[in-house]
Length: 454
Ligand code: GLY
Ligand code: MN
Ligand code: MN
Image 1 (cartoon, helix red, strand yellow):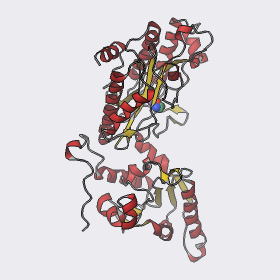
Image 2 (tube, rainbow, N blue to C red; image 1 turned 180 degrees about the vertical axis):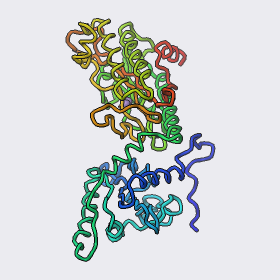
Image 3 (cartoon, protein in one colour; image 1 turned 135 degrees about the vertical axis):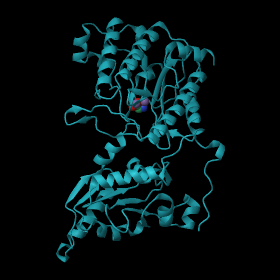
Image 4 (cartoon, rainbow, N blue to C red; image 1 turned 180 degrees about the horizontal axis):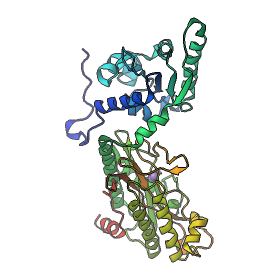
C-alpha cells in the first residue's frame, strides 16, 4: 500500500468545524440517482484549469456542482452516475498517477485513490473516457448533463451520443433526451444540511473577525489596499480564501457597487465601505460594513446610516419560513424610501415613490441573493411566476444600501459622496432566522466604541 500523504494541517491548527463527511457525499449521490431514475445516466466534468497568463495558472477551484457530489479536488476528472448499474453506480475518471508530473504539479489520487479515498465504486484513467462512456450510455434513455457551462465538454458529450447513433443499425441504442442536471442539483444545493450550515457559520465567523480587524485598523492616511491586506490576512490564517474580490471603498468609492481598485488614500471625515467575505471548505460568506475612517460618523453620515440599518433590520425580520423571497426586499425599499423622504432627498408620498421606483436613484440593486458554495448561489428565486417561499435550510444575504454619488442632482452637497451598505448572511430556521454574520457590529454606537478602543 502507498504511504499515506503527509497531514496537510497541524493538529493545533485543525478547524473546529468538520468538513463534509463521506457519508454525506454518498447521501447526495443517492438522492440525485433516486431523482434521475434507472433509465438514465449523469455526466459531470471537473472545472478546467484556467490560464492566468502564458504558462501560469489561476489557483484551481473545483466546480461547485462537481464538489457537491464528489468532494474530489482534482482537475481533469469526470464523474458519472449510472443508477442501478450492478458493477457500481458511481464512477470517476481521473488522471493517472505519474511520478514525473507529480513532482511538478503535486499529488494525484489516481484511479486507485479515487475508489479508496473518495468513495467511487469504480475508477478509470481519464484518458480512457472516450472509449468507455458510450458503452455506459447505451440503453439509457436520458442523459443528465449541464449544457453550456463547458463548451468543449459539451462537444464531447454530443460526440459520445453520435457515436452510438452511428451504430444504431448494429442494435446500439443512444439516449434520446438530455435533461438539465443543474436543475436537480441546484434545488438540492439550495437547502443546506446541518454540516453545511456549520461550515457556513464558520465562514461567516472568519469574515466577521476580518471586518472587526479592519475597523480596528482603519485610520486617516492609510490606503484602501492596506485595509484589504488586514482582511485577507485574517482569511488566510484561518485557511480560508476570498469568496470574491473584496471591495474596500473610501468616500465616494463606496458609491461604486463593484469597486475593485482598492488603491485610494483614506480621508479624515469619509466613510469606508468594506464588502468582503471568505470561502471556507468551499462555503462562502458575504459581509458588508460601512464605518467612519476617523471613528466618528458625521451627522449626515449617521442620518443615512441609520436609515440603511433600519432597512437591514426590517428586511431581516421578514426572513422566516412561509414568507416569500421578495418580502425582505419590499420591507427594505419601504424603509429606505420613507427615510429618504424624511431627509428631503425624495419628495412626495412614500407609497407613490415606492410604486414609481424613485428610490432606485439611490438604491439600484436588490436586497440579497442565495448564499452557499457560490457567493451568488444557485437556486430558483421564482417557481413559475411566483416568488419562492422561504424554507428552513435556505441561506440568503440581506444587503440594503444607499449611494449618493458626487454630483447627484437635487441633493445637498453635504450628502454627496456617501455610499453605505450593511450586509448580513441569514439562515432560515424552523422558527425564523439566524444571522450568521452577527460577529461584527453594525450598530453605529458599537462601531464607534470598537474603533475608539482600538
Ligand atoms: N459581494 C457581492 C455581493 O454583495 O453580492
Ligand atoms: Mn451579497
Ligand atoms: Mn457583498
